[in-house]
Amino acid sequence: MSCIETIRVENLAIGYTGKNVYKRVATGISDTIRSGELTCLLGPNGAGKSTLLRTLSAFLPPLEGKISILGKPLEEYSEKQLARIIGVVLTERSSIQNMTVDELVGMGRSPYTGFWGRLSAEDRAQVDAAVEMVGIAPLRSRMVQTLSDGERQKVMIAKALAQETPIIFLDEPTAFLDYPSKVEILHLLYRLAHEEGKTVFLSTHDLELALQVADRIWLMAEGGELHTGTPEELTRDGSLERFINLPDSEKRVRIHFDLNK
Amino acid sequence: MRRSVLTGMVLLVLSILVFFFLNLLLGSVSIPAASVWDILFGGDGENQIWRNIVMKSRLPQAVTALVAGAGLSVAGLQMQTVFRNPLAGPSVLGVSSGASLGVAFVVLLSGRLGGVALSRLGYMGEIAMTVSAIIGAMAVMALIVYVAQKVRGNVTLLIIGVMIGYVATAIIGVLKFFSAEEDVRAYVVWGLGSFARVSGGQVATFAVIMAVLLPLSMLLVKTLNLLLLGDGYARNLGLDVSRARLAVISCAGILVAIVTAYCGPITFLGLAVPHLCRAIFRTSDHRVLMPASLLAGASLALLCNLIARLPGFEGALPVNSVTALIGAPVVAVVLFRRRKEETAE
Image (cartoon, rainbow over all chains, first blue to last red; front, side, top):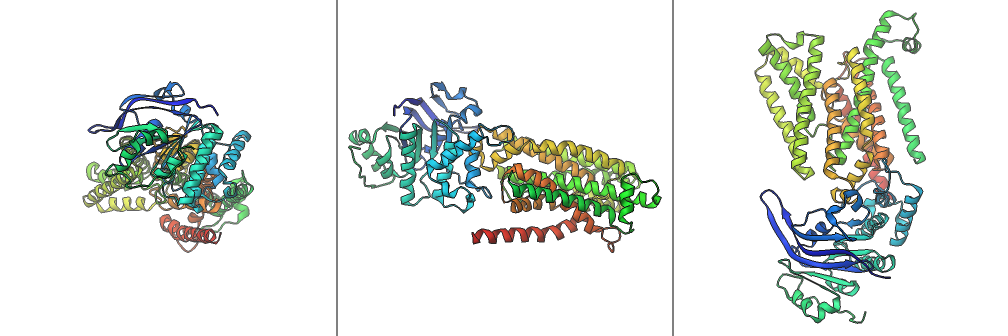
């Protein structure tokens, strides 16, 4: 599948501003993210992974620099337009009750449905396809609150797929999951990038797994320094090693991965 | 729409019709059903006293109960969704406290300042109370809407609403302390809440206002469904969250303000009916819950009014006692059984 550049970030500074607050979390972020690729954002707690994701999905305004998505500056998109371009899976564990998996995935169609949010035949078909792709067909009529964490995460991914967006951002989709579920979710995301041509960008703490599946890695050190490249490049130029040896990052993680992947 | 949902709705409508007619039929004076029917649908030959009882007392009361129950339940559902808090209800935002404060000002101060106890003014006094309740409720509403734009967190907003309620109650306490005894009594009676207070002409106004507002509130179903997912997801799906929050809070606030102005603070219905509907229809979809809450609220209010007025309770029980006494066990049982089914699954 041919990869095209979907997100371009130039000299981006992220952080929070308010009346009496001005907090820069990271600066000088420049890179591109391409479709058909799985890009993993790694970094210790507090490095600004969530802030970066929130900025890229237009929840937060950037402090400086430019973000363009599909060749157009992010700020020129309306919320309604963005809803058809970026789908998100968030860390916030919503307390949704009394809603079936089917209904929740169907909510992903909201940007396309009319005033009452009624699903058309085409919407139904998209929901079916999303459910099929994520492999949660047996769960369809289950209530969301009865699902395990891993199942729920898959449902949220299916929701993002039903949204039919070329770009999917995921904020720590593997947190709270047991090891087999982590592997399963990352493989699913890998497939979505490589088989469906989606631009998948996710933050995670699972360094080892990320190095195995990611096409590109963004390493975010505390203080906002960012190194990007393929896992091989980052290993060769030593930034991965430096990253791991950072005092407060996940220490002494042993890395095994196949350089010839 | 699923078949079970449709059946549920039809049953709710039928229950409203039955309870409505029973409200006209039962009371301290027994009137045969056939005569009630005749009085309603144009028979002239009926007993004039019966006609007065049905048309001037029972019918306005039934209409008030129906409309108020529907309004409070819809408002309660909206509040619970927008605050994502199952304990939210029409009273949490301090809107009903605002109405109480408005009434307290007029009732308690009029005697003091104007030299005329409002309780002696009759019909004019009634209108003054309604107007002051609306003004009080709207003032609090405006404050809440202003705060809603300033603060981000739902919980913060909820706490501020509760605080406003406390402040209003405190001011009312101070006012009471300085008021004449009979005025305090008039205020306390208002505070009990009642479907019976609204008289003929006002009922029509009340019903017309609500007949406009309730369908308008139904327009928010897609917004409410999106808000269920949480702010982040809702926003990602193209919803302007702060504007949506404002719209829902305003809508619920206005509904509560109007109902409270006419009936006094009615508790419980707005909190309980949405839970009842979620449990019965087993869904969070507001396309089902909104009409269901409207119908179930109307039905339950009619039932409560009926029980409050059963022969033997001369002069009628306070409706708030009945709503809680009847409603609480019903809700508890429904939720309990629901939980059991869930664990059995």
